[in-house]
Image (cartoon, rainbow over all chains, first blue to last red; front, side, top):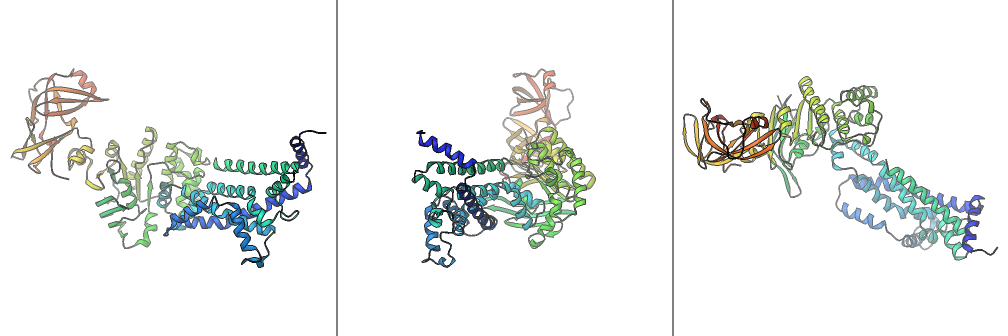
Length: 230
Length: 361
């Protein structure tokens, strides 16, 4: 059959997904594992730090928030380069032997999305307006009770920021390529596999992985809109 | 007994002075109405008295405690008070959880919270929404949730910051009734700010007028509405006639003032030589012909120059040497067949003619 390679690739891609091709499944699972773990650790670090920035008045608070917002748009290859230098044998963290491992990819993605999560946490908490804060105080809340109430009240906005962070982590290609090295069976993830297979004219695998990546992104967006509707 | 005593309160935000020289004392068990134009500092003053934010200067004692010296007691003092805000504020949780908030902050036991929340929602007629998400309710219902959230904590002082400004007449009446009942039956002290003059008169035992960041006058509703202390207060409380004049004589407790081409007799001791004559439109009587017998010290022939509908009333402007605005029921104006150009008589007793100094505050 001498059809269009794109059409054939598409049909083959569907077959790969439906038949749960081992290579496709393995790459998908690794991708989810790396980005979910990175999002978890980033949230663990960024949410308390973001809350700290929001609740405490200090000199240069405005500058810190602006810097965080600037870092939203940090090019992933720059993060990849810096983390490569830190984790490589010539860098200060070379002894951890994280370069070209999923562990190194997790650390790097964590670093990548921490500014995003911190900044969005600050804006989520800032969404609690002045009158609501006055109401909490007037109802007799102590300082700690005030903080807890504000965090609980902005839980949906905070959850959206975590989902956005995950979306950025799973769809980026720069850091996982540099830190992971796209090693088959070890550090290959959805984005790096698509890049490689496309350049090798192996369209069916690329399309299959692309469909899966889109489905994940779509799932995140559906979850996001469900959360934001609350 | 004085429950709140404020002296020389000042509040500054950056370069903006919102309050200055505020002196106010509140008696236990009274309803004090705080009236004043938007931006006069009513909300800020209420927040300071409720210890939500500190003043920039001055002295404030609440429940006999000097709040400037004893900052560590603010939380305890604040938990004996409650405040309802202008905009209905509800949290993204069930109506039950909203109403329970203040009790949970105070560490009240679960079964007591359960009982009190159910009672409070009953009182405002929202029992059927107990499990609903509070943010799904209408504005009026949200404000009633906010009110019961305050009332379950049994505040000794209740602050209401324009609580009915955005509400329909039904919800307004419910809230006014609850506040009046609580004051009468539980002896709750109430401070209510409002720009609705009628609401101030309806509810308050005493009224404080705020003008440009300070309490310009405090007294009985009658004193504030009929004997305003300055031209600005008179303007704010809706006095129709504020006429510049000068004193021409004083004798036997009566003061004669020349206002344009008319001499008006007033029972107010003259405060200065240059004055404003302040007369409420409803205090002036209008007659079709010269009354045979009239007790009022002032009786003038006049000509109707304008009629303005203020349903169900009309403002009738007459020229009697100076312009006077007479407020009368529309039905009565119809019965008298008032029309522009008509020759009439107006009368007003000396005691309704109030005088304020021209160069006063």
